[in-house]
Each structure stands twice: as C-alpha cells, then as structure tokens.
Length: 264
Ligand code: BTN
Image 1: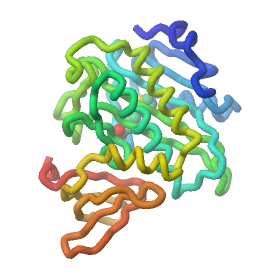
Image 2 (image 1 turned 90 degrees about the vertical axis):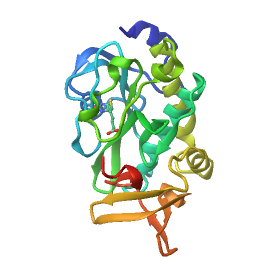
Image 3 (image 1 turned 45 degrees about the vertical axis):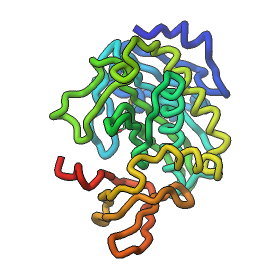
Image 4 (image 1 turned 120 degrees about the vertical axis):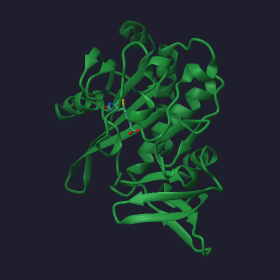
C-alpha cells in the first residue's frame, strides 16, 4: 500500500503535491481533483488513489486500476494562457514526465502521440487531461496519469485495444511506487515552465514512437493515413501521405495506431 505520509515528506516538488489527498479506494482521481479545483483548491493539488473503481481513460474508455499495483494520480493545474488548441501540450507534459521517470529505473519508453507511454510497443501508462473553461479562458486543468507498475496492474488483453505491459515486467525486479510517483511529479514540475516551448517539443519529439512507420490517425472528421515524420509546431503530428504530401494532425480527440496493427 502506498504510504501518504511517506509521499508527503517529499512534497511539494516544484510547487506540486500540496495539498495531497490520498484515498485507498475512489471512483476516479480525476473526478475528485476536479471537485477540489471547483472548490478553489490551488495549483499543484494532488490526488492519489491506491485503487479506482471507475478510472477513466481517453474517449470515455474504462481505465483499470487494481490495488497495490499501479499509480493513479491527478494534479490540479492552473496554467495561464492555454487555449483549446494548446491544451494537448499538457498531455505531452504528462507523458514526458512518465517517460523520464521510467528512464530513472533504466527503461527506455516512447510516447505514442499524443498521450500513451509505450515500452516495446506495449502500453505502460496513459495520460488524461480534463479542462474546465470560463468562456475562452481556462479555469483549471486536471492532469491524470495512470501507470501499470506490478503485473497485477496489467489489464486483460481482451479488454484493451493496445497490448499492455507493466514497469516491473521490464525491470525484472520490484520497483518502489513511492519513488516512481515522486519522479513523475518531479518531471511534471520540471517541464511545466517549458510548456509548449521549443525545448519541450524537442524532448517530446526525441521520444516519439513509430517514427518512419505508417500509421492511421482516427479523428472526428475521419481517418488519415501517413508515415510519421515527427512533431510540428504546437505538438501537431507531421505525417507524409502515400503521395508525398505533408499532413499535420492537431492534438484533439484522436486515436493513432500503426498500420500493421490496425486490425487489432
Ligand atoms: C488513457 O490512456 O486513456 C488515459 C488513462 C488515464 C488514467 C488516469 S489514472 C488517474 C486518473 N484518473 C482517472 O480516472 N483517469 C486518470
């Protein structure tokens, strides 16, 4: 079981993690963090749960969080000047923080644009941004991060559309979830002042999965097929179509998969 006092002793990090609310079991940490944010809880408020009964993934999917085996956390963020177009940069920030935390335990992970963290093509973590707007102004954003740490945290293959794995399956030994969680917070705090700046896009681009491969991107408006070139301004994904045309896909409600896996 995660120990809230142990986490609290190392928080805040870069102004994140105070206050910390810890729950042995909860519906969704994102929902609880949004409740706190609506009540005026400050930037950096952190909600951590050992188990979620209605954890949420992107596109309304269920996110599996079993006890003693995963990380499920949500941060209240109150960034200035973010728009609907640049909100996706927060997703990347979360994914980058997870990738760097994994690098600290010797794992090389990649980001499946825009928000999944993959190890050897299998999903180990996901990021979910939920935002509240006052007109065109962002009131607050909730950065939700889920990481599969122990084998028990890996959802059954038939319940997911991307094959999953966990940190310990790769490291081959026990990983301290407290240290991992604190490293994720450290990564978020470290990159936060660089949100959307060229250095953050470079770090993101360096960890981009499927570079050079054909992918299909499912958007609300339809499907786009192309070879992954890298990131463009604002964190859009740059593809080259089969007839050599450059296509840019903006972060939004999108779903990417490599073409050779698209029947899965
Ligand atoms: C995805 O890959 O679809 C995003 C998954 C995000 C899961 C995390 S777990 C903590 C936070 N609370 C939730 O209900 N969801 C996010």
